[in-house]
Image 1: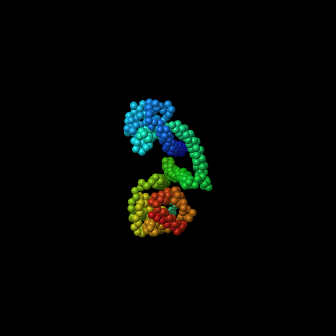
Image 2 (image 1 turned 90 degrees about the horizontal axis):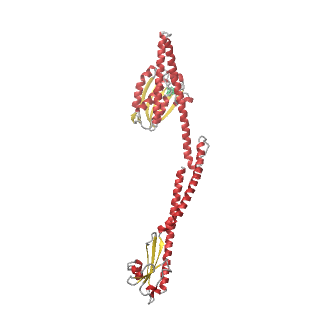
Image 3 (image 1 turned 90 degrees about the vertical axis):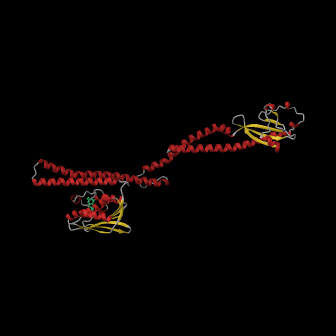
Length: 441
Ligand code: ADP
């Protein structure tokens, strides 16, 4: 940031200096040119008014202005353009001057002016010619720096100014960034302090976002820690049981009847482990999805009917009556995930039910939502636990959940799938009356 501000400040300063120098030089040069031309015209007119060049018997070889007026070149031209006299060169060596624009102009208009590139580098020659009464022309000329030369002559000063400004910019940007960053650093160190107000109004959205992200990150880290601890604990219990039963069997001191029971326990605990690991894998897969899931148009009623059919055997075993009703309800979703969702809800409705209980699955269109409703008249969920049942490993009645093959992850998976489908889940339950879970797509 510091070097960015530095670069920009230096850039702006250099541009400003160059623009100012260019502007003032151009304006100054315009005035300077005007001055040179005015001076030339005065000199030419003064020379003319002396009538010296019109004296009848003037001997050209007697004229000698060269020593007196070094910076002024004086040329005297006859009516036919022949150079009669020049204080800078011998007149004979000079070609006919009729082609010079200032001379032509003087012959026609009385006065003529021109500016030409000088023989000397970086200089221009300014010419001013006047017509004398005897028909000849008197021309005066002087060399003056051209615009580029003026620029070049001020270049060292400009460079010095730029260098001074660059050093000033470095210091200023250092102070500026320090001043700008200080409150931000204070803000960052106060992220956990909800009462802290950001130093600039413009930073409010950023500080709000940082604070939310910070809280989210902390919450996510905590959730991950909790989850790891829970997973370890959940895995440890069946593994300890398996190890214990295996040890007893190893000793060979158990009767046949007991042996059978131990084998069953080992099987049951191994199944639990598999169910747990499957659910953990599912959750971690759901955590990883980010939009690359295949979505398609799915008839929720058809899918729910398939699930009801698949689970009807396990319902029958528990003497629970299960049925489906409703209408066609098309949703945009992932078939495997939606099947998982419906199965989890129905399994819970069977698992937390009483013999002779009922499970009713329905698909309806209500208020523009396609709704999946799984209703049971089972044991229900106490109000205090209703918010928490969607948490990972949260169970109301741990022993019942475990005894019926629950992992405590079913509703967490359901919640996740609901979020992926931009749907909403509602729970309505009363202990002893039953539970109704509605998913609105
Ligand atoms: P589990 O594998 O233990 O069923 P879930 O995440 O599916 O885990 O459910 C969490 C807890 O919510 C369950 O342990 C149970 O106590 C309660 N629960 C879920 N569905 C129902 C239901 N239909 N009726 C009563 N209690 C339920």
